[in-house]
Amino acid sequence: MRKIFAILLLSMLAGCMKEKPTFEKLASDFVYTSVALSPISATGAGYHMHNGVPLDELLDDYSPDAIAGQRKFDLSFRELLNKAVEPDKLNAEDRADYDIISDQIELAMLELDTLQSYRHNPTVYVEAIGTALFNPYVLEYAPKEQRYKHIIARLKRMPVFFEHAKMQLLDSPEVWNKVAQEENEGNIDLIDKVIREGVPQAMAADYNTAAGPALTALREFNAFLAEQLSKKTSDWRLGEEKYAKKFKLAVGTDAKPAEALAAAEAELKSVRAEMEKLAKGDVKKKLAEIATHHSTPGKYFDDARRDLEEARNFVKERKLLPLPTRDNLKVIETPEFMRGIYSVGGFNQAPALQPELGAFYWLTPIPRNWPKDRVESKLREYNDYALRL
Image: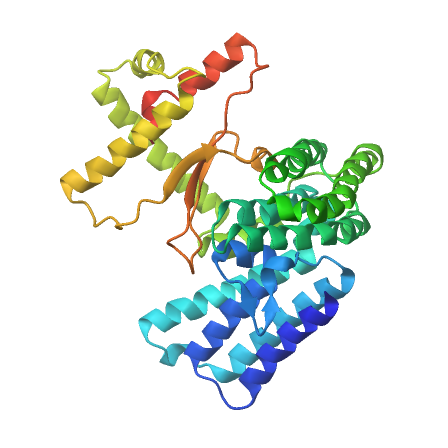
């Protein structure tokens, strides 16, 4: 993997340094090389081959050498961008792209040098592995046999992947550790049941051979989280200084966090006043009434699919915007390995480079072991109106 990483990095830099590149060339190289350096993200983006390297067979590399290589890439590209481009001479569209790329580089450097999630957040590894296997399983970018070949190749790389994870993790907030263990059980189920059930018969032996060590690695990682990392707790809060830096780059604004909060609170006050006007002064009573109109655990998914169809028809009838001819949006259960951060649901877009493939709205089912009052509380909060939103 380190050799592959070096090839990707050197090919990009060599291509740019032969002659002074245009900004368009630089932007293209940055996007495709950045994606290639995260093979898991590449599959999700619909980018499958980079300079002859089959990305769908690889996992992201968290070894110390690879982390150092990622930092070298960001530093080298920042230097190249500063030397080759005069941002004030770019047209508006290119200037916007320049600013986005610059912010992404600075955000990556902040992560690598300061935040270092890979040293403190075990869900980084758990969710990466789930995504690495789930995308080839659900996205039909190639024939089923070829996609299972990719899954098997990634399964074979998992023991080393988790050895790097255990090497890198220094401590973790208790809640992140707990969520990682729960999500990792979802990964085990994904490999041992969901994906295994669809294995082409001719590939069953290869799958079993790869899945065995992969499942062992997952279980050993959970044991590591429960028995070792749990004794090294830390605070999930970034603190004012680090948060301000991340906020600026992630949101793309010069506003300070406190200013954004004040603006949001002012808007909330305005919205609340409008609500009181519409509710004729008794917002609490009106919200309580609205909350009674909700689904049931058994109809939760059917109602969501109905809401999707209503929304689609509404857009068509009002001619709000042209809808694509393809109808590839599906409502499915949130994969277990992502339920820690998608407790209700979330949109998972189709691959940017292959938009014709599936787009999914993940909806997290209500656990059967929840007590009735907790189920009712969730259904009241995500009532018919909130679910549509």
